[in-house]
Structures are given as C-alpha cells and as structure tokens.
Image 1 (tube, protein in one colour):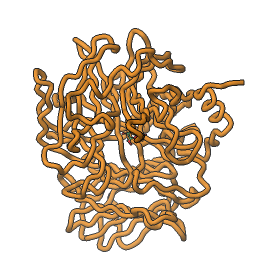
Image 2: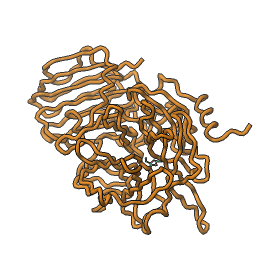
Image 3: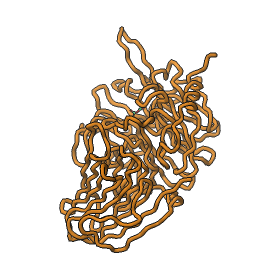
Image 4: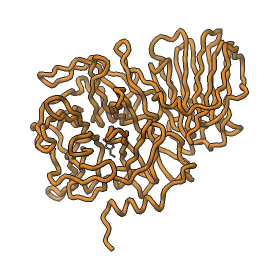
Length: 486
Ligand code: FRU
C-alpha cells in the first residue's frame, strides 16, 4: 500500500527506536538517526514542544524531516511522532529550520522549504518560508505555501540562502526574522510582518555584518526583549578566529539599540554564546512563567564524530535560563534540574594539593560545582569521564586567566578538535565551575553563567572516575549531586 513520506518515516522510527539506556538521560536526542538544530521551541497548551532537524534514516545529515518531542520541565522529554517530512514540491529538498507559535488556529510551525529547480540546465536551490498548523501532535502544511518567498525581498538579496524563520507576536502583528545575505555575500537578518500569518510583507534589514568579520551567512536568528534590552542571536557560518570567536561556525549574541520605527537593530557588541567545542543554532522560547529559555544543538558541524557502535547522532544542550547582568547575557541551567538531584556529597574548604580523588565524587550523570576560593597555584584541573584509558580535563590556568577543555583522550577515533582554551570572562577573583555531565556531554557553567563551555564526549559510559589536580594548593568547596531521572 502507498504510504506518504511522513507515515513512512514514523513507521521507520517506531521500528528503529534507540533503546533509552543508549541515549543521554536528560538531554533531548533523536529517536534514531540524525538530529541537528532545535526548531519550533515553543509552548503549546501549557506544554513545551521541541522540534528538530531530523534524518530518521541515517546517522548523517540527509533527508531532513522535523522530529518532535515535548516536556513539562525541560528535563524529561517525551517523543512524539515526526511532524514534517520533505514531501512537497516546495520543500522536497528538506524541511529546514524554523520556529513555532501558539495561535487561536492551533500550533503554527514556520519553516524553510528547500526546493531544487533547474535553471538553464543548472540545478539551483531555493529557500522559502512555509507554514504548517497542528494540534501538538499532527501538523498539516498550509495550502498557501510557500508564504514568504525570496523574491519578496529587494533586489540584491540572495534567494538561495534565505532560511530559519523565527516568529513572534506583537500587539499589532506577527513578525518573523530570517537569515539571509546580499548577493555580494554580506550576512544579514531580514524582518517580515504579517497580520494573519498568510500575507507577509518584507519590512527591513534588521541587522547586517558591518566589518566583514562575522562569517558568510547568519543562520538561525532569534530576536527578543529581556531585562530591558533587545538581544539578537545568530549563528554565523565560516568565521575566522579572532577575539573570543573560533574558526568555522559560531553562535553569537548582539547587544544594541532597536529603532522600532525603522525596524533596525544597531548592534554595539557581539559576544560568543558558548566557548566549548560543540554548540550551534540556539533558539529561545518564553516559558509560561516568563523565563527566556535557550536550547541549542550540542554539536559542531566541523568536528562531527561519534563512536562507530553508536546508532544515533547528536543531541541538544540542557535548556538554559537567560538573564542580563551588566549588559551581558548570562546563562544558567534550568532550575528544574534540581528536582532530580540525589546523593549529595559536599566538601567545604578542602585543600587540593597534587592529585586527589574524593570519596563519593564520581559518575557520568551529575552536577558538580567546584569553587576555588583562594590559591597558591597556577594550574587546577578536574579530570572526569575517566578510567585507566580515557579522560577529559577541565583546567584553569590562573596566571593567564584561561580555561581549557581537553577531550583528546575522551575516546575520539577521528582527528577532530580536542582542545579549546578561552579567556575567563568577568571577575575571576573567585572561580566557580559548575560541570553538568550526562554520559556523552559536559556543560561547564563558569562563574554563575558568565560563560559556558559545552562539549561532547566519546567515552564509554563505564569511565566514571573524577579526580582533581593542582600544581600548588587551592582551597576548594565541592558539591556534587547525582542526577536521577526515573
Ligand atoms: C544550521 C542549518 C540551518 C538549516 C539547517 C539544515 O545548522 O544549516 O541554517 O536550516 O541547518 O539542516
């Protein structure tokens, strides 16, 4: 019997579902196959929905569907059927990234439909914005798709790179930002407006790269107001390393002034959102209680590796609460994680000298905070996900005020990037490192979210030792909780 593409995908998913114990415990991961960007992170009928770029059939990027899961607390994820398949002429080359919003008509998804078209014998790709409406479980694509096409933009704007709509509502209308670039290759974010979701008008270039240092294309934009400030988030591709940015694809936020009459965001500052090895394409949503929560793909396109035996690829970060302090965007793990804390172990003001192992401090699914109050030392390391063969190290170099994550010995069998070393941001008289492990990942929140380093690991789950090492003596307070999600 003929089955449509979505039905086919959902049947495949059912049969090939990865057993729960092979996946991370509290990080959203695919049912099977491949996952990239978070999409449609939104609240619908009181529940938090997360969609994602998903290829059910392979461990690599390919036939891009929208996978779907939901949560009530950002920690426990429940799989739902895949919501979109690339089954129309206008999206046959992929249902690319997008967002979602709750409306009177239902849960509205806005995504990029990618189509291939032959132009004078050459195959060209076009990216347009499309809608689907659903009930939190199943979704129907709009018969008016695509609702926003590249030729609605002024001359000189690239029509092949026009993607990742992020939608929101203001009193007067719906607004949407998307990534784009000029035909000369200057990355920019374009803004559209609609009163009924169906008819859209191009409004403005919200922001544009000014000095040629921010890559070739800004993917996955997000624009929101928080703590009295407007913030623009984007994921610039193909950057050259400078200041706090690394080579390749970065995820950044812009702080600046928004001129609401001109619909232009004049950015004054650009900062990296995460300084680890794996973080891209973040998207935010407003939680029912007013918190702005961000989630991202915990993977780098350039160091995209996994153990040969692993039957699935990629996961999301732990969702993070955002706030502005002194003009900087700070991030904390969602507080709901604390509801899953068990087996606390604490050491107050202990001296770490040389190498030491502390009873009760081990595991691969945990939350470990280390506060270094004082120090006659230069190097302080936490080694984790460790046994006689493997180990990942987080090291603070005090004189240089640098933090380094080194996963060289985490079990990678590819020559992907293993080390990242970054300047510690903000006031560092006292260093506080909060390390969250969930089997195959480490997220390090530095000084209450001034900075975060997210990194995936390739280490067999049985390597669960943790040790501390100091080349002098450091007075340290250590608090550990195991995270248990039933
Ligand atoms: C970002 C991205 C998006 C695109 C999607 C395709 O990682 O390249 O711009 O919509 O992935 O899967």
